[in-house]
Image (cartoon, rainbow, N blue to C red):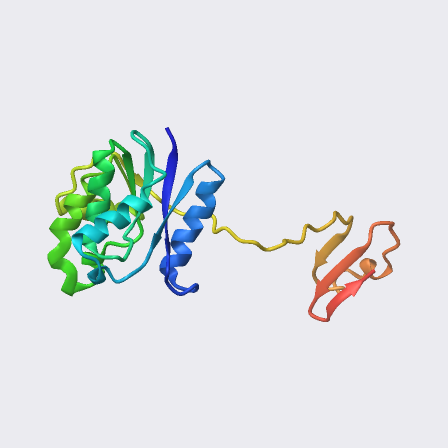
Length: 203
């Protein structure tokens, strides 16, 4: 049994959609997941047969009984996403639907698709939602998937080379030297740094 996770390509590099999905993919790689790349494209250019073949290619590395985390949506349209999940179910793949956005809730003009999206989410064995409020709303709309995880807050991956400060034995004092005149004649081995209205003094 292998672990897989979908990851979107084909949008601008600074797209929030790409940044969010790529961040999840970076974390998943450290946990042993294999990437299933999905390219953003105009699905209207595909015939049903061509779309089916395209998905067969995308699913080439997925085997019977594997686990796949599906980052939803792919922004290739509901038809693409639903056909993908239907084909995964045919392979008895365990589906974890990781919801980033729900298009019918994002745009009023797309609300008519809500029943279709709920029926697709109900194909999932596990659903990951961004908040408790989202969970409650989807249940109100007809969600029946029982295993639901709240994503919550998590660290954002980065490639920065962070500075690790070396330990320095110092004493920091915040206050007025006029009120504590003895500090003006500090003679101990440990350096004293005073922060006051007059600025910073090093002793």
